[in-house]
Image 1 (cartoon, rainbow, N blue to C red):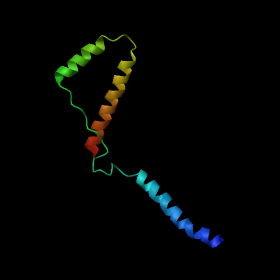
Image 2 (image 1 turned 90 degrees about the vertical axis):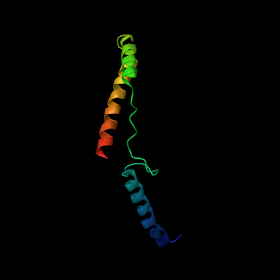
Image 3 (image 1 turned 135 degrees about the horizontal axis):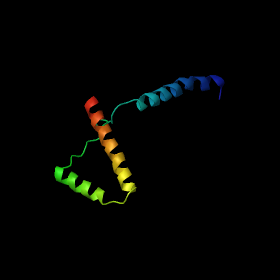
Length: 84
């Protein structure tokens, strides 16, 4: 293959790389849905029951830490939904 043939492919490769970088910056999916997942709404009764169940867990339970992480994610989704 002559050297000039390889050089003519370079712009195509550069264009593809730029397109990949730009697609990484896109907000949201191609299905029209926004980038923020919906926040599930729990009734007051469900929240009270969950709190009572959490109180029965042993000290230092992994489930309590996981619920704390879940609460942070819910707050982040709420903020994300307001920004859009």
